[in-house]
Length: 604
Image 1 (cartoon, helix red, strand yellow):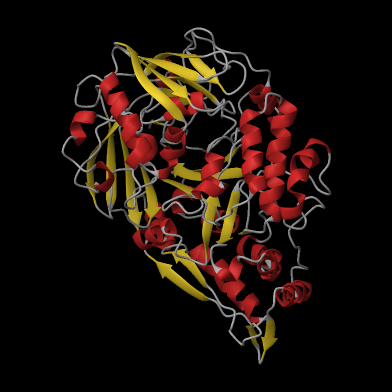
Image 2 (tube, rainbow, N blue to C red):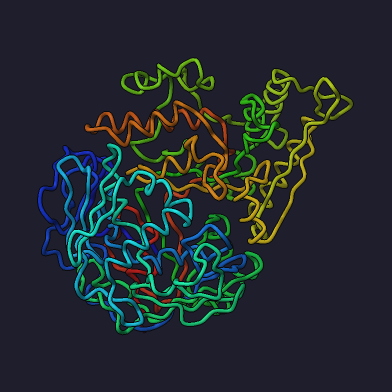
């Protein structure tokens, strides 16, 4: 079953133009805020355009998660936490619309106001805002939450806090943040920080909490039950204070959201087939085409929905850790890409049905263009020409094999690049002049059978150039611990990007975050050009400069050869019980956090 994008055709370029339309300063309290210009929805909007304000309440959605967890606090660095909890428990001043590249509307905040150049932002708290225990949300809770998250919270919160010059209460229900540097996005980021109950954490080490404390928040759902490593049950709060807030109307309709944990993908899929799980995202098109014909599908009890989206591809694949000597040389990384026989892998895994990711912003107008850099892109990158990886300015594209298993041309190219980097095959083994073999370890999380199959084929390809890597499969807790400490040579990597890249790019690729434990710069890139392009996209005042800065960033990262990219998913495939429904009108972000289960409902 394929759902169209409602009755309103649109091009992604139109959405991007909305983001980059001329800036207009907000001079008085408003109901929402956009990165550029004004938000699309008027002050009297009833609900988000992709929500059903008449959706019934009730029912249950159960999803299968592979792995385990040992913490329920998604706001700190420590522990392995179900990824969804950050979105379920993190009620904030503003909420993000999935139908605009970057616009926020009031949730806890009844209004937002900024300075003429976004040098400060002020929020006024709704008088009725309350925590799930019935106590009111206060400015004291706000001040404590921002300072705590900004100092001992997860690294995703630290960058914003470092740019806050002052935070002050300006009224009984208002707070103002003044920023230490010019950065238009900071006013929006300030509205997206979770606000927690200060009193709950008095006498408790917030940064060290695991499952002994369930965070109290003002969000629509509360954690009702859990068993470490097995399940988490979230229940809709019938007394939720914000049910009539326009941003929340038609959302959070399902009574119970249950996360069931399984040891591997096979067990998770079997649970779905027999009805223990009633919604399942499928990322393998071959499996979608061949294995979703079980009785529940044939009988109509399970619906197969294809959900389009207009997001950039992001980057999915296997990242090389440049902190390690093996991958500090770009020529070695290039050799690894030539040895990675994507065309053969894609044919084996998907029947060649999935297109490859070609860059971080591929599938969007922000993606780098073929051929040499020109125009503003060239102008932005030229000052860093001496330090750029070859191909950045001249033009770079991923190696393409002939699809055969032997991949002779790719193997020859890999051998040539390894030799240029000082490695040659000696008695069948790739080694340096001192005879030290070239080897590395590939770290994978337990339960990822598809990634394991891809890596198995890759290991066979590497054998043709005399390289014999080891493969370490660890449980989810160990995987997080090791990736947080950058204790890997190569590992699975997934980085989603948006049509409105901003400060998060510093944490993804910035030099300052490269050595911060628990950070997201897994490849360890430290590039003046990358940092400068992030600076430019944050301070651009025109659409042309914004787009050029992102294209230049995309070009620099892609030519850096940090990741072995695999497929992109330009649609989402969601199999679900027939009782689970979603609106016909879809947001431009498609299946993204904030869509399922947020705007879904259960109805017989």
